Image (tube, rainbow, N blue to C red; front, side):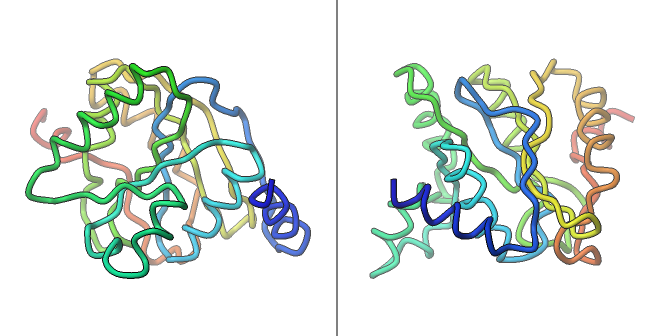
Length: 191
């Protein structure tokens, strides 16, 4: 209830417009892209709270140390031990099988730009769990943010990424100069 109230206040005073093609009705991976600013986190919370989507997001272990740990977990954070990333996939699979409906927020373009490729974890998790991918976005040029289409990935990496690239082609992020074009290393290996 409090989250929904905070979201309403945020959207009432924000310069941003929320748009949503779909609201997930089953577990989904929510892509957060282009991820070019720490403000993307605030927008993600406002989107999920307004649309009443339970979200979980992956964060490096250091974000969960000390006083921040309980707060980050309360906001849906899942600490990732980079030495054992397979555990995260297993936890997600368990939640899917338990029947809970949630969005797993992943920012595949990394930490606010500067990468040549997107990280492929979202793709592997989707294929292993059968979860679809919902395309979340931030676009400074139109001052819109929200959720685009939900896609079921086919396993044809290039074709799936072509659909994702087409959606993000006109999305600039909050800081357009930090935007990474949606491309996986696996696509380069297919050539």
